Length: 390
Ligand SMILES: Cc1cc2nc3c(=O)[nH]c(=O)nc-3n(C[C@H](O)[C@H](O)[C@H](O)COP(=O)(O)O)c2cc1C
Image 1 (cartoon, helix red, strand yellow):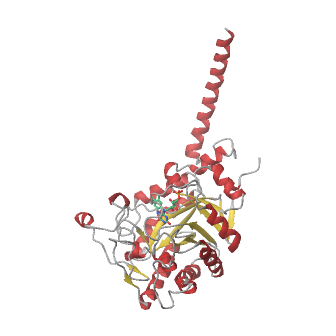
Image 2 (cartoon, protein in one colour):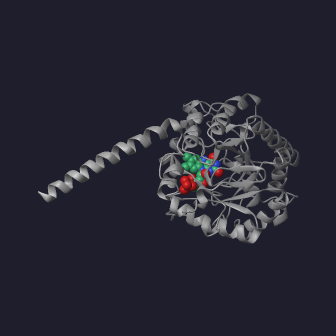
Image 3 (spheres, helix red, strand yellow):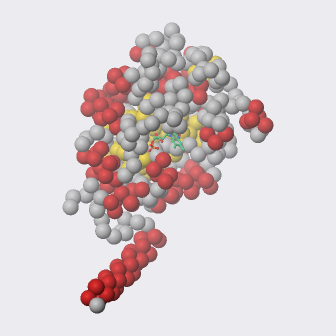
């Protein structure tokens, strides 16, 4: 039986991923001053034990003010490098590839952790000792009623932002990451520039399509220039706002073409989030609901894509790859449910009969247990046959 695509290596620039499974970026809201701790280590290490090809950190803020919550990771300071290095070293030791999502939350910064309310910070957060801060955006348009009114970035401040993205990319390289992703989705800063719902500027960074995508292209070009030439850079896009007058899937295709032009290697196709939650929105979804975006961008912009969103099992993931809808599949919540998702998918796809792919510390025992179970099963079968005969 041929190896399933899902479990086959793939090469991006000079980097070979051992398989096509990706752990999607997932904020843990558990850092202090943006510094990774034992939680982040354990959280990401479990996916390496589970043999996920490419493992993304959560959104790491390039500026303190660009955190979504007080608990976000960051790359705005050199002291954040070493704890991240501990994670990348371990991920690599397991034959997996560490990736970082670089981000700025824009007008969706200064939020409550999901379990504290998932809205703009309020008195309950102040009572916990966590103060809100001034948020920034292309225009002074809040996410919605009751949200902080953002400060409209001046041209000088936009220049300063670019410096922060460049420095963040440099720290990510120093921390040992092999892949960087520019977070351009979910209503955060870059997405807020893309969408006409949040970008009301009349200068070079607003107005028509070329103006609204300018910052996305400039930041992507900066990260690309910093990142080693033989290592890939991804861009996560909200493929559609899903709101009248908002960012559209047609524009995503156009943006993807332009991003390819500045050297972006993979478009990570998410959606939503401009006027509220993306993933936490209480909207009924069907498995693979965002896959059509990845398929369309791949076909029409001639660039590799990553599909994400309710990809639940190996067979579904394999179908997505086999039907050329995407080049990589990202798993989010299902990886929280099953950190060994890749190994279980491999078993389900019958790629390998034993536990050879598992870390030896687990595989040796599981293989032995299987033999024991097999013998017992054989004994039981003999016993059952004997009972029936009697
Ligand atoms: C706990 C959690 C944290 C998340 N944090 C991020 C993040 O930091 N950056 C991002 O782009 N998406 C984030 N997402 C969205 C996921 O990357 C993914 O796109 C989404 O969960 C859909 O995939 P799924 O259905 O497999 O979970 C987060 C999702 C979850 C569940």
